[in-house]
Length: 485
Length: 83
Image (cartoon, rainbow over all chains, first blue to last red; front, side, top):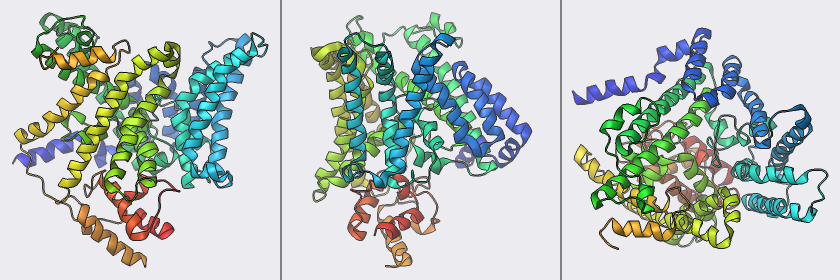
């Protein structure tokens, strides 16, 4: 009886795969309805740029990469950072050309990968990173070298490059990976431009990865396109729901108002302090309140990550790419490894592809234990720290050496704990492989999930955003949770 | 070795790392191993180890493309190409 209800509920939840609906969405009227629904569900700032392109994809789905590349011009323009005016037209065009030329150069390198020097072919990712640091060093040094003589306004162009390059770095790494795998050889420029400068959104993390993954996820026929688009609408709707939940959560728990009718909760809210306020020592709380704030912060952070990812992946699916979700029920994960896999999928994939596998396939091949440990730490610890150094480079440089270390130290410790947690979780899972798991009743599942929440809530103390919270403050708060200090 | 014998060897190996409630033999050649529930993402590592030891494939130069390890058919293609 219960399993029958479960199956029925699952069918309702999987409405986007219903053959009847998929068939209707593939018709012209269905496409119009999809477009209108997408328009209503997308955040306004996204809809302005994306909606016209989605309309074009609904008409010419096979041209999706070229259509996305049109959007890339807009993304490049935003990076140029100049408001549109006729007198700045020359600069805007120069900035646009520089951004496109950079992508084109890397595309050509990947396309002609076999003709590159042996050292580059053996270490394509290392080459990308060396080139990045060389370009960034030039961009920093150049204004001083010009000594105020800058008739061509090179400083402005270099400043734009400093902002653009960290965004492009991991995307270029994916382009070169396509070169190494041979898939870039027959690809077109638009195949790479569309994810290097993605109109569907993104951060330093390339959502949807690169050419190879997008090619594998491309919906091949009208029915598959319809299914991907319905799945995209579902994610956009979920993002909207989570936004409302988060607003109500913030009002009910912390007494903050963020729209979505959350003001109704203010009178009855718990008014618990935020975790960052407690860490900073700006509010006092009982031990129980501190623990409550700790766990609630994990829920809030998960919702924030889910909302961001659902919008980006939802939009990408509207373009007919059946890509994985970025966040998939991490709070129901029963191991640290599973949580890591489900929480921020594309960041984890970046670390796995660019740090885990290269370490795993090259080093300690005769020592399986060390091989696994080194690969996990290369990804979850070193790679994770490195990613954030690149992302926050501007702030770190401005902070000076001592300031940069103050900013970085909590992150380094967080990544170390994460790496160790993932490694031991991996070992545990390996040891369990082949043995049948006990049937998971609710109580047992809660017992498996609780330690995962505990682990990620605790390490989040050293991960929570405000950079002014130093390592000592965070560590002091950790001990205070156990009545120490 | 022929593709058929590679196929047999691969299925026998997948049987040792699969989840207990899913049978490798029932799986289509193009079905995604992770999506089908046969293996978890960690098992991809075991597949890499298997290909290194059984077929002498070295991923050091080409890198690992996890996408090529997700179906029986693509793993067999990989063995044909590098094994």
